[in-house]
Image (cartoon, rainbow, N blue to C red; front, side, top):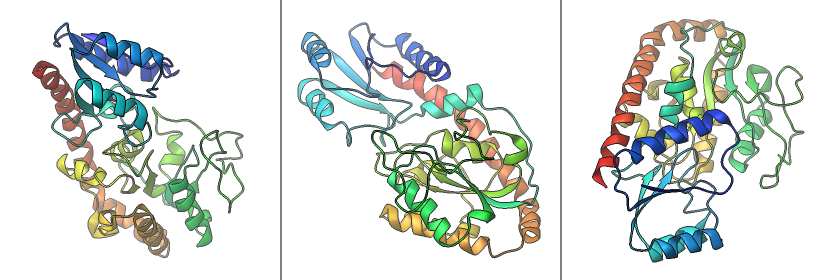
Length: 316
């Protein structure tokens, strides 16, 4: 196997650890003349051009792992690859070669906890990077005066993402200067256990299919959830056997436009916040077995995901 990665590898050691694990799985089975190209943060530059020109006769596996399949945002390097090599997209692609970096990540790093709800808040909605769809959700929650009902955060603007025009950011937890980056944990359990359901704003709403730790966290943390992500996200969850609590939240995730899906989340959140916390406490107890089933199904899927990587590596 010939490995090609972006110049700037992720800085977090735990991300690099899972990357290396996946690289090794494929290295054990791929032919020597097969290229495994990690498309994360891929640039159309001389380095890529020279590499492709030197390996045009080889089979290319275009892998998206920690990041979504970036054919939408990084059109130039993908167009170049599509026009010059024999390729297959693997990883976060809605095809037969789909598997999840983040399932493997969660298996490695997420702690095992017990189901619990201490009825103090209705929902949690944590957001680091202020992307437009995240701003939209948080602004909608504030417009309906729901901020005191939930645990909400929203980050400061970045080079690529503008802050909310309606809210002063950052919105932080416990007056901290920065939003906690609890990518590999549930954060403080005393905070995690205080709320009933999780509002997840995934990394992207336009991708082929992308499920990150943001979606896996409420499942492994025994929480009902609503997720704003791409249109294939719920299809993948259902294929894993995950209960998405349609009897409580409805099926607004089927709406084609992300703004309509966001409005569904905001409206259902408002409805649930009109209930008493005592009622939600009783509902949580009724849901406990379904929440446990979700954890069990996801653990099974983590094992299947690993085997899927091995099977895919053997096909090439």
